[in-house]
Each structure stands twice: as C-alpha cells, then as structure tokens.
Amino acid sequence: MKTGVLVLGHDPSARLVGQCQLAEAGGYDYFWHADERFFREVYGELACCAVGTSRIRLGPCVTDPHSRHPALTAMAIATLDEISGGRAALAIGAGVSGFRELGIPGQRPVVAMREAVGLIRRLLAGETVDVQGEVVRFHRGGLHFRPVRADVPIYIASNGRHGQALAGEIADGAIMPACVSDRALGVFLANLRAGAARVGRTLDGIDVVVRINTCVSRDSRVARDAVKPGIARYLISQQPIFHTFVAAGLEVTEDLRALVRGQEYTQDAAVLEGIARAIPDAFVEALSLAGTAEEVAAQAAGIARAGVTQLVIHPMSPDGDVEGQIRLFAEEVMPRVRRAAV
Image (tube, rainbow, N blue to C red; front, side, top):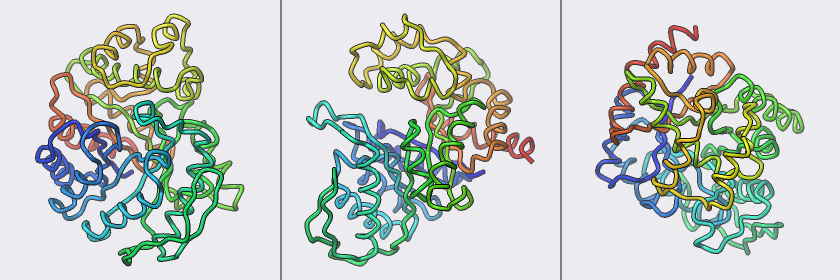
C-alpha cells in the first residue's frame, strides 16, 4: 500500500516545502495539496515543492471543474509535470470551498467532472479541442506547448455513489475521504466496481485511495479530540445528505443536524471546535485515524487488507506540529501496518 500526505496550504511556502521534503525522506509516495480557498495558491506551492524534491509525486487534491476552468487546470498540471520531471498527478472533485464567495453554484458535479476529465486528457495529448458540454465549454483551443506526458494520472475524489462510479469508469485513481470503517470501505469499493463494470474495467490498474484525517499521540483522548474539527467540517459541507456518514452507518442525530443547519462551509476554528464538542467518539473511529501508534496501525492495516492501494493522511496536531505527525506515521505506524497486512 502506497502512502501520501495531504496539506491545505496553511503554512508559508518555505515550511510547506520542508514538509514535502520530510515526506519524501520518510518514504511517502505522494504529497497532495488541497485547492482550498483562500489559503496559499496550490500550483505555486506545488511548484516550489517540485523544485525542492526529486522522487515524491505531487498534485492538487482536490481541484474542481467549477472554480477553475478545466483548460486552465490542464495548463497548470502540465506545467507542474514539466517542473517536477514527470511526477505530477491530478485529483478532481466536486469542490465546495470558496464557491459562496466566488458566486459559483457548482451545479451538476458528476457531469462537470466527466466533461473536465475528457477535456484535460485531450489537451494533454496535444489536441485542438472544441467542446460544448452541459457544463464545460471550450472553443477551438489547445495548449501552446508540448506537455511532458499526455497520460498524467487523473484521480476523481467523491463521497457520493455517482461520483465514485464515475471514478471506476474513467479515472486512473479514485479517492474517498474519511473512509475507515469496514462498511464505508465496502460501499466505496462496490461503487467503484459498478462504474468500472459499465465499461468492462476491473479495479486492477485503478489506484484506490482513502484520504483520512490523522493524529497519532501517546494519549488517545488528545488524538481523538484533534480530529473532531475535521469531522465537524464534513458535517457542515455534506448537509443535509451526509453521504460519508451514511456510508459508514453512522446516525447524524437531530441535535447534530441542528448544530450545523444553515452553517456555511468554513475554516473558522471557533465554529468547528464548537461543533466538535458534540461529536461522539464513534464518529472518530469510523471516519478518522486517531489514537496511539498501535491503535492507528491496527485500523490502517484493516484498510490495507480491504484492497486500498494508497492511504493519504491529513496530519492534524493539537499543537500544530504537522512535521511531527508526518514523522510519527512513517516511523511508528507504517512499519506496524506492513507487518500486520502481510
């Protein structure tokens, strides 16, 4: 099972490059950077990381087809691939951050992702393209340089059935956030297989990725509390359907629904921590990796045995020590996982 690190662009570029170098030295395979508004610019920071590393693969996880036109994404990812010497990867999702501020409705996300992937692949292949899709439109244009690769891997990230099926159908990889419980993993894999079967594919050759908020600590209580604000953000962004929670078999009570009802997507720590206090530990166990190294390794080993081919951690630390979390997972968790998953 490959491993990756996801960051959100909270930190200045110099520190972020250091995190990427640390991940590379620690044996991680991927360094993903969220296209999250309004932190530091994803492609600028990834370019800095590419220059400062030599092996690790890099890419946005995720960008979306609404706030960035897919042609501009093709241009950006081809440039990153050139800078990195062919190490770029692209993850596309429905997106949510910044839509309100930008006045973007984000409608028909599955159609938008399908059309975006098609356009990006054609542009990377050097074609002049005219597309009049239901969401994506592009008028007789092409890239004015030759990409290093036409086949930059494209991942689709989704917490919904239709998006996951689309990934099984057309993507090089599929990403499911907060997918830890056996039930959620089973739903994710079933949806991927259903999409793959529509076009005669299997999961062989598809990178099956789970992206998990993670905190490793000698104190399990500290670790669980550290990841709860991330779960609060899921509750806010997924209302009123709560796809991820349903897939994991979790009941979002009326009290929790009332806490997030009408709350817009936010990174405001005070808002998230207020909601986090009401989140039960059962949600943490089903949606996050949090606890001692032994506890986290036991859960991660189960993920590996289920057929996941890449585990991406979003390191969360109560004291902001992202670097410490990157080291702990590589040095204390993954050796145990590899021994247990054999």
